[in-house]
Image 1 (cartoon, helix red, strand yellow):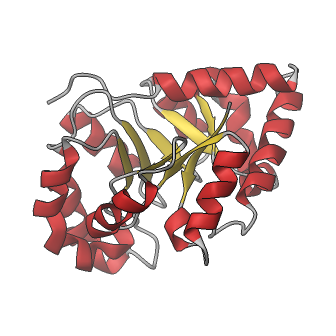
Image 2 (cartoon, rainbow, N blue to C red; image 1 turned 180 degrees about the horizontal axis):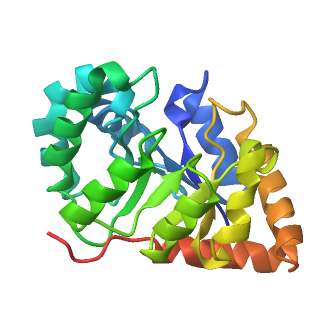
Amino acid sequence: MLVDAHCHIDLFDNPISTAQAYESSRTFCVMATMLPSHYQISLPHLRPFRLVYPALGMHPLRVSDGRKEVDLFRNLASAAEFIGEIGLDLSSEGKRTEEQQFDVLKSILRYLGSGKFITVHSRNAHEELFQLLEDSRVGPVCFHYFIGGAKAAAEIAGKGHYFSINYRMLRSKHRKLLDSVPKERILVESDGPFLTKQPLEMINYVYDELSEIWRMKRNQAEELVSLNFENCRTNAIC
């Protein structure tokens, strides 16, 4: 079974139709959300689906709204099997809310128990995020759309974390991550609709590319990524 570890289905023009497409293609999808309230709203809509699961999110670039929803995150976290996206963004876009981001992330990390899949945002902040995860003893997690460089990726993978690869990474210098990170630490993502309006097509492209890079049959690449996805679950940390 194919796995899309990070897609914002709720932000597509027709979320239900998009979710149905995932079901029809037998592709498991983690639907990342921006805020706890978005996750809460999605729950009844996605209940009929077997392969599309909402993740409880607190996006760093939405921290002005998110800090008002920390209590809601806490109330929802214990029942949420999937978390994300959460993290830090210290790019020019996120720098002005740096202090708020750290405060909110520290607040929610304490509510994450074992057995959860967590997808994290780390733009221009992978060192700071990695240290917070270490300090909070949260892991392993999946670093989505990682742009921190191959050396940093190798160090983070060495601590047990994972990385989800999208088609844009494969077409840029970030492709080098695959040379430094064991294939047992790699997942696949579409990051739709931000990177693509055709997430299933892009997911298949990434799987094809990985099978060539890893020099294995396509079905073997699918099986490996599925196994990686199952292994990317938080340990008993709280």
